[in-house]
Amino acid sequence: MKLRSPSAQELQLATLAAQTLCPGLTPETLVAALRQYEPGSADTNGPDEWLSVPEAARLGKWHPRTVARWAREGRFPAGRVGARWRIQRSDLDDFMRRRGAA
Image (cartoon, rainbow, N blue to C red; front, side, top):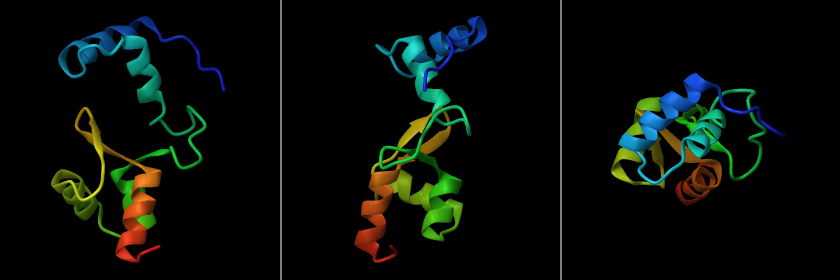
C-alpha cells in the first residue's frame, strides 16, 4: 500500500519530534512510522504489527494499566512513541506463550 506524501503540518510536527525525541531520524520516516498506528492508515496484519496498550491488553485479557506497567518494567520489549507505549505483536505473542496465556 502506497501512502500519500506527508502534509506540511505533518512534516513540521515530525521535524520537531525528530529533533527532540529521535535525533538522526528523518521527519518523513517518523511520519510513516506514526501512520502505522492510526487505524486504517496502513496494512498492519502479521507478526510485525505494532499494538497499543489497549490492543495488547485485549489480546492478553489483562487490564491496560497492567500492560503499561509491564512495559515500563521491561517484562517484554516495548517502545514509546511520544507518551504512548507500543508493543510488537510477535513480542507480545512470545510473552503470552512464556506466561501460558496463549
